[in-house]
Length: 188
Image (cartoon, rainbow, N blue to C red):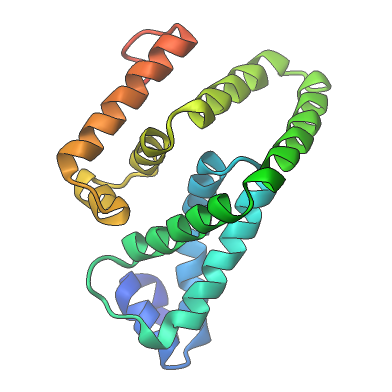
């Protein structure tokens, strides 16, 4: 049965993990760890915070396994858990976050200055900084869309109407294009 783990859908893997099949969790983790981390990295004020939130999210998945109900897609549920962790952290530790952001920025500046591809890194850094400067609702919708979620899935994760999600993404793209001075085709 474990031979075909890669062929099973996420919901059946989560149910198998709840029944004690540890390899099912390993498969879920390998499928979603990178995308979840990218989402948290883009939505969080720092890399350190994103790493911590990713670990906390996976710990919650483990803790909630026995109560998991396949009401939608596992991926949507996973990102909703991560989003709630991020919101909780931002509410409770806003003063600590600013200090961490400054520390991470200093490290990033040293890395970029020693990199042979400094221009490319600078452009990536600039884009990420502009994404972080977007209003929270726009940033969240934009990042989720970039992670491949549909408007319906983003609506489910953020608990707002699809038209609102669509507007937030449009405003985010417009602002990024304007802030970065690039054409419409690049940020679409």
